[in-house]
Image (cartoon, rainbow, N blue to C red; front, side):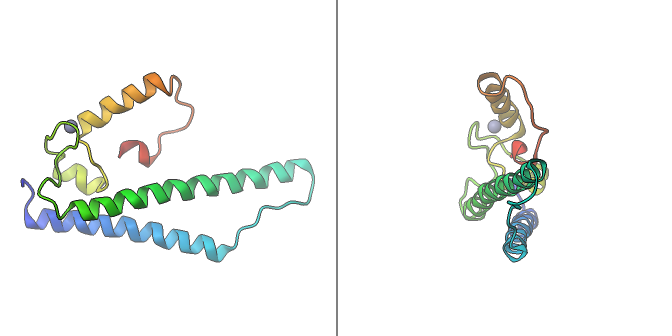
Length: 134
Ligand SMILES: [Zn+2]
């Protein structure tokens, strides 16, 4: 293990902060009680459906990230925590602190993204989001 006790504690803190942020956000969505507008002219309907779709996508994205964060919290108990699941190199403290759900080193992650772009996303239409980096 190349990480010190202090570094591990800092990563654990980062994991908990990210997890709590998602849980808090999902709670406030429930309280907002969002319902798409079904009356009005076509433009209004299209607009409100767009908002509903965005919320759905955000939520499923957050749910995926939440699962990754919880996996990472469990992974911290293993001896191989912090090593790339692809090449077994050290992921590194700075990367883990910034992206505590990361399971791969930056080189492997970039290679994977290139492969994914090549096969599945010949043109990147959406702006990069946080999950792309994990
Ligand atoms: Zn790697």
